[in-house]
Length: 349
Length: 282
Image (cartoon, rainbow over all chains, first blue to last red; front, side):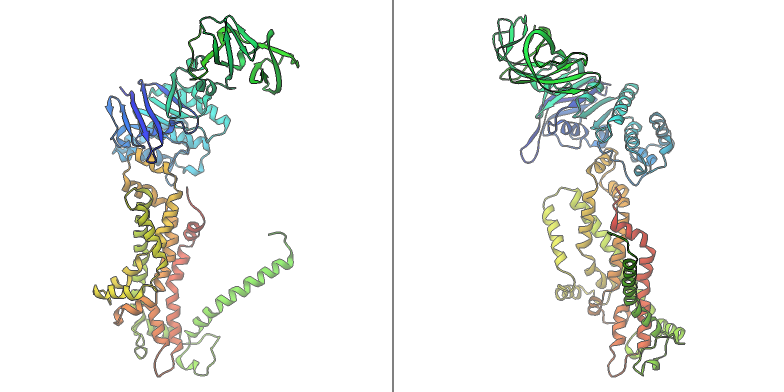
C-alpha cells in the first residue's frame, strides 16, 4: 500500500506562471514511473510536489492512501536522489547514510546494520570512511542511492540522477538502478529529459509537455502509438519524421508524391503523418527522395533527405547502395496519422 | 610569470628582502628598546643592540604598571583587551552567522529590507556614529563596563554579508536533502551549515580578534577608570605624558606585549585562516 495518487494537481508560481496544470496520475505499488519531457515541462516541479519540497497550488497528492499536501517532507516516508547528489560534504560516507536514520532516532545498532547492508548492495563498503570529495562521480551517485535505500522508504524519487555522469557510466548505472528497484520493489518516480532513460527504466512512461500530461503508457505503447505529434517527436531516436500529407482514397501523398497506399478508415484531407526512420524503406515505386547528407552509425546508416521539400530521415542498412535518385515508401500499417490541426493521434486501421 | 631570468629572480628577492626589512625593522627597534633602562634614550639616539633591563622592564610593567604615566599594571589591561577582543569576535560571528542564515534560508516579510538595512550599516563604522552611540551607551549606564566596551562594536554588517555570500554558494539541494532526512531548520544549521562554515568562521575570527584587540577610540571614550583600560589605550597614555619625557623603554615593553596575542592568534590559526579565505568546501 505505498501507491502514490496524484489528483488534479496544479502548481502556480508567485508570478502567475503555471508550471503544472491539472495532472492526474495513479502510481501502483512497486511501479517504476518515469516522468519525461523537455526542460520546463514541469516534471521536476511535479516530483518536488510529491517530495514536499514545493507547495501544491491545487489538487491532492496521496501516499499510501493518506493525503500529504500539508505533511512535512521528512514525514512523507520518501527518499530522494538529487541530480548533484547533495551529499553532505563534511560527513563521511557512513555518516551521510546514517544521518537520516539518526534524526529519526533509529537505534545505533540498527543504523550500523542497515548502512552495512546498503553499502554491500551498492558495493561502496571500501569508501564508508571517506568524504564525498574523495569519491568519483559514479561512487557519489551510489552513495546518494545508498542514502535513499537505508531509509527503507515507501517511495524513491529520482531527480535526473544520471545527468552528471559520463555516457558510459550512465548506461551501467541505469541498469543498476533498474535491477535495484526490481529487487527492492519500492515504488519509484524518476524524472529525466532523456527519452532513452525513460524507455529503458520505466514500467510506465509519463510524457509531460507544458505542465500537462501528453501520454501515459508502457514504453513500447508510447513508442508504437504516440498519442500526439509531441510524443511522437520526443520518444525515439532518431526523432520520428513528421510531415504534412494528404489522404485521398486510401492513398497518402506528400506534395503529390505517393508514400503509402491501402489506408483504410481514414477520411480524405490534410493530416500530419509520423514516420519512424526505420519504417521508411527504399521502394521502386515510392516517392522521390532527395538525399541531403548521410550519418554513418556503423551498425546502420541515417540518410537525411527530403520528400517534396519536407525533411525525412531514413534508417537503412549500410549494405543498401545509395543513389542520387532514390524512391522511398512506408507500409500503411507503419504510419502514424495525426490531426493536422490538434496534433492528436487519429485512430488508424 | 612569463620567463625565468636569473636577474629577475634576484630583483624579486631584493624587493622581498627590502619589504621584509621595512616591516621588520620597527618591530626590531621596539623589541630592543624594551630591553633598555630609562636613561639610555636621553641621548636622543635609539639603541640598536639589546640592553640589560629586559626582565626588570617586563616584570615591573606586568605587575606594577607605571603610576607616573597613569598606567595600571599591564596584566589587567591585557586581560581587558583579551575579553574585549574575544567577546567582539565571538559575538560578531554568532550574531552575523544567524542573521545571514535567516536572510538566506527563510522567506519572511521584509527580508530584503532587513538585508539592505544590515548592508547599509557597512557605511557607518564606529567612528562615524561615535557621538550618538556614546550617548546611548552612557544613558544605558554601560560606561566603564565590558558590555559598554563590546556591544556597540558587535553589531556589524561585514560578517553578515560574508556569511550571506557563502551561504548563497551552498547548493539548495543540500538543504532539501536535509529536510527529507528529517533535519529541522536548527538541526540543518548545526549539522550542515556550521561545519561547512568552519574555515570561514576561523578566518573571520582572526580578522575580528585583531579588530577588537586594536580598538582605540571607542575604549578611550567609554572607560574612565583604570580597571577597564585596554592595552592599546595604555600605550597612548604612557607615550603622551604631561611635563615629562615619555619613558620609551616601558612604552616599547607595552607595545611588544600588545603585539603578542594577535601574533599568537594569527600563527595558531594560520592554516584555517588561509583556507577560509581561498577555498570553499562544497
